[in-house]
Length: 470
Image (tube, rainbow, N blue to C red; front, side, top):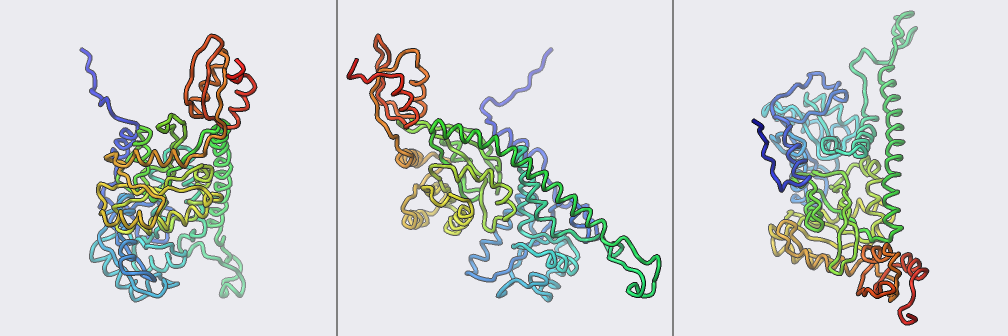
């Protein structure tokens, strides 16, 4: 007897990816941390029971709270359990311990009381701040940058994405390497050795120097690999440009609903999860306007406040999808407590991408079904070139498609030609790349009335005949 497993028939690719991601998850409380904090760089990053710490150096108290709430979501996305969240009011972060020596001692007592094994700071700490804060609180300390890099490392799937994340991690790690204890400290002989004399000279920091050299060699190799892989992406992009297919890039804050919008517009079936940085690898899909005009939609990596510059640099080849687009759909989470700050953070990252500033932008306020109508009104008043949609329910998608159709580059030439039957490929290109107004089959060929780009117009003009002369 043969047994067959029942498989769901309507699962998309993203559903399988989500099922696979949830099949192996981190379990809080099973810590294998070492007591020697100086070995932190050489162990795999494991986030379990954590305490969050932020410095409120500017803005309102609500801004500081929202920033720590976002850090909480990042920590939970990485697989940790958040136990406490603390905000220290200061003019600027302390140069030695980030929050000040007195507050660091208070933090140590809180960490011991709640049983935490990790402290996450809401900012990028210098190597000195990391080391001194760890010496005081006696548990592992990481910063916001390391946390985001860990999430990227978990979610990267493609070969290019993994290489980009590894490069960013090594760039972050290189200045933060330090020796394992005093046995690798620099030693000298003679008088400087305190009378130890011959035999008192040790190897010095040879281990850390070897590690640095290996990291630099690995970074150089990764850069070469990313450059080679980006060549294939550029070839595909140039092919689309040669065929004059307009490109639309979906950009926006992480978890704003970019992948959901791509699925709604194209039926791509990419992974959708209520988590930060759920999808990293860009997805390009075809779509058509109501008039049948072809264009491409590219879903890009999500942005976040204080996105590590290492990631912007490593993902530069991926972010070129935005720079080479004809139109940007800037997706905003309308249900977020502070959507304006999300818009500002995304535009700050876009400003770092060469050429992105000059591309037309449509602000797509998503999650209208869960947003406050007052917030939606405020956003549409501030962002005149905006559309309110719900990728989940489909509300406003028709209006968005109309706006996209209006903003796409206009077709240069309107033609009415008799195309021979043996050049049906040109008819197909007119349907794919242009806007066919009408076509009529005659004994001599196909009478094509369409709007097309200059490239296709030149080919049609060479092989077809004007209808008036037939």
